[in-house]
Amino acid sequence: MGTPITVTCRQLTFPTPPSIDIPHFGILQKAQETLDGIPDPADLLCKFQDTIAVALAPVRRYLEMIEAFLTIKQCMSVIPDAITSLDPGVILDCMKNLAKAFARLLSWLPPFTYVRLAMDVTSYLLDLVDAILSLAARVDDKIDKWVNLDALAKQLGDLELVNFVNCGMEDLSTDLRLLLKLVKFIEPANDVLMEMFLRLLNSDGLRDAYEKYKEASEYYDKVDTALSEGASSLPALAGFSSSDTQDPVVPVPRMGALWENMNRSRNAAVVIYNTLAPFVGADADKEARSLPTFKYL
Image (cartoon, rainbow, N blue to C red; front, top):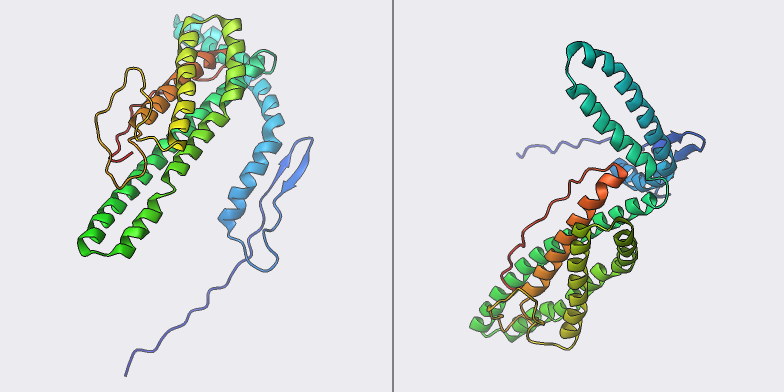
């Protein structure tokens, strides 16, 4: 005789939508997601996050003002201690924090408002390139599986499986061109902002980084044209060469020059971000990265 089945009913609880009371604005509350189902509490919280970000944007300015006043108060309180202890290090640390706090306040006013905007655009570009390279790594792994599957299909004489692999790869060129369009989408805004800063700041480091960024941007158009025309190789990229031959099954050429160019663009954006950061009291904490390696792309 078998063991009887034990059925345990789990009581479903209806989650309370998140809400937040914003000064001088009111109570911001998330509506239910559905009329005929019980939403997941985590989904409500995550979807509410974007709404909170928009509502808190003006509040953040007041908080930065309060931070500056608190920093001044802190500096005034540590001066007597520093004098009695003969330790100027405390005052120096406080003055550094005060300089950053006032820089954030100045970022409310032109042209520093545009400096912060440029930094946000540049930061977005960095995240976008990182996401594209991460996606390329996953696509490269998928291509590896397709190539192995194609070899197995040909070994077995399975033409249907061969056609299946070809179908899986035929959109690869289009997908890569879409990635290029994503990178180029952000360029117009970045170009206008950066040209203004070059005139205002006259920084050699900023100018050199922007020239490298522009060179990388122009190369994207050449790659897009090559892919659309079905070229067997990418246009030459200054300072980069690759002798690797592509597997005949893969319908796109080796993309090493594109990834190298994209990484150059990214690392130039790092210099731009770190150069602008001190002007608005932000940390120059962006780091360059090395180029990942791919087997087929």
